[in-house]
Image (cartoon, rainbow, N blue to C red; front, side, top):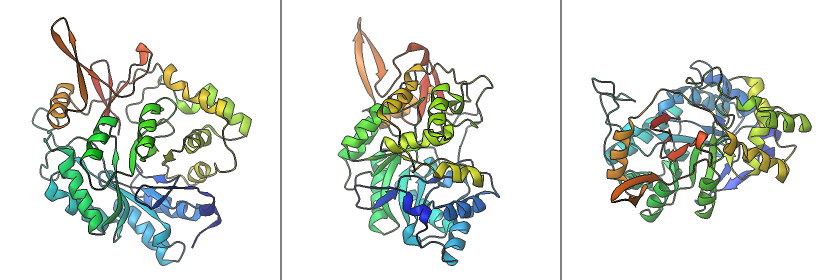
Length: 371
């Protein structure tokens, strides 16, 4: 049953032939006990796209809401677009299908519309721990070629467990490695994306490969656990507030519309009904080209020093990626010495020299976990 709200949402066609609503409800860090009602509210408002993941540990709550709304006749399964993700401890080929089936069981579904390779790094499977560490508190990695995992994801498509498969937090070289060795091409690459990190070059690359980019944390993740009181707040950015005032919208609505107007699907998260509705009400205006350009320039002007808890040790990650993904680095000779330089998107200003590096962001010699 299509609501008037759902009818407003444009859809984008994936290279698999299926369509995906341009806006969805994110469920990362959604508080236990609140997710079920948030999903039910979102369905009533008009959302049909729901972004989930096993590691969020709330898929059962999402599934409970979906079951109720389908049973009540408020929505049909075919109207919904449900995404889940393969966690880092399940990259071994024999673990991929069971991991997907576990998410399907939690969600109460026979299939998901999209299954994403959540991160291009692998953890060992240690007694079911999601973030396994050794006795020194260091994360425990495993060397698994992305292609071995991807081929099992392809089999899941053939089994009817998922309609489309894609990637999350992959850079252009990692994407190309998948493209060069796959039968089924990735349909989506989901990454953090907002004016402070606009991912322009990655988006251009994905568009050339017929891959849709989905933006998570489109509001700059102001509630991130590692945020400091003096960190810039994207929602308070004067340039964004000025545009919001012009359109009589909120800063959040401008930031979400910014992605839609770039052809990027977007999954803002909230469990607050009024905010869920506010985030959805962005289809009665469009940003002008000059406004889009001005917002994109914030990427170059962001001088934040983000001090967060490291997820990974740099040297361990460099070793892992060198072994599993030789396409990430290019080497330069310098007076007989070999130096390695990461090649994906980075800001031109040295003060905010953020380098996209697989699943993380590197500033100076620190690896910063993003999601």
